[in-house]
View (cartoon, rainbow, N blue to C red):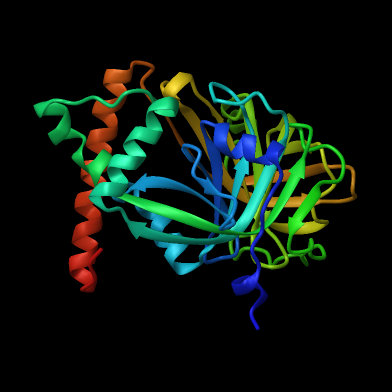
Length: 320
């Protein structure tokens, strides 16, 4: 019998306070090459302890992550910061599980809209906003993650050994094969390190059981050809592998979000929580610090992305 299909994982009150209060979490999903991608999402408190699920929503117009999840549903959600949220509970929670995306009904959209007010503020309404933000607010996908494992650290820097709920923690993964283009940095690492200066930093990789693993990054040290990362725990696996680094910051209601991410090669030698990262690619964005400008930008990006998603569906003969 498939253990993943039968196990229901629940969690204590202090972890539930984090799940219910965090304004943002970091989603990690697996790439076809066996690496990971880290991106911020807004979970708006979506969780069901009895069912053992957590979740988040995203616009169909921001569909790249949905394509990756459909190809490989093993994901992780890192609840890593309490800024502008609804709870002051300290701690770092890493959820690993299997994600399933589904279109939202009108009733669910209304329910999610009411729920989101406490986290994201009152939505803009009116003839213009209803039309402009339709792809952002209405054409949404609910992603539900059936929890397989939770790693919980009472300290927000994830120092020390975690408490594990659910499936036992697997052995460390073996080193991955080096990329065809080599492992050396392909970007100016020192310049990238400056862009990774946002206060919330994470590093992620794929674990031995195929689930992404994410831990917070404390200090970073820049060199022209590499970036040294310091983490609080001992989960970093020895050897070399594809990895992702995310740095981000935001204001209340996720206004003024700035994000920088990088994919590359990570090496670890020892169990002291230190890693060396060789960046291969980088991207990011800075959202307007004004709510009106932010909504205008979100509407534009969601409409453009939705148009592309529907064109791809027509080409492949699929529908949502």
